[in-house]
Amino acid sequence: MIVTMTVTRNLVLGAVAAVAMIAGAARAQDPAPNDLLLATLWTQRSVEYKGNALSVYALARIRLDQALADPGWTAAPAEQKGDFATLPPAVVLDVDETVLDNSLYEVWLMKNNQTFSTRTWDAFCAAQLARAIPGAVEFTQYADSKGVKVFYITNRGVETEKDTRENMVKLGFP
Image 1 (tube, rainbow, N blue to C red):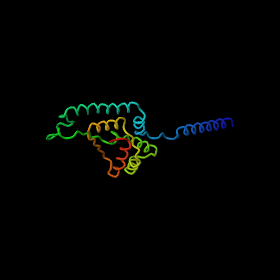
Image 2 (image 1 turned 135 degrees about the vertical axis):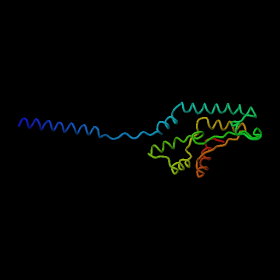
Image 3 (image 1 turned 90 degrees about the horizontal axis):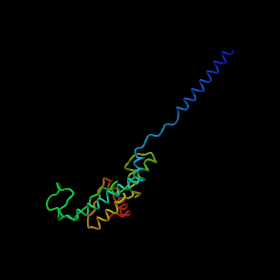
Image 4 (image 1 turned 120 degrees about the vertical axis):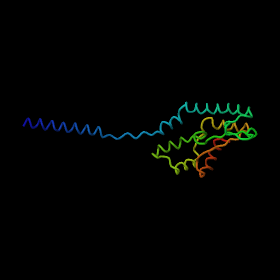
């Protein structure tokens, strides 16, 4: 009888230990890492991002002044034909992540466990929530004040053009 109770007791203790180990291993899985998280946090919160953007636009202003002082200067000498020096000066900028910060869209994607789709992107554009990249408004206003034509290019769909223009005007872009 004593032998049987010892064996039974050991089996019960072994079963309890096995259940405890299995229960510990059966915890919820960590969510998959999201590449957008750190990139979006860096864009929205870091002083380095803001400093880099401001530095780039400050340098652009210096280079614009240098270009305007030299009537023969061109950004693309190999591509110029004819008397390009008589053409009015211009600055050409991409819209997304060059003058407009779309990180709020990335936040929405993460919060809703979504990936990019034209439908959600168009809705974001319609909401006109994009913010200006630091220094972009000031640079484009400066260029405009110097008589430089500012052109914006984008691969956004034509259905977002009106909202994009309105968003940019609200932010102060010429």
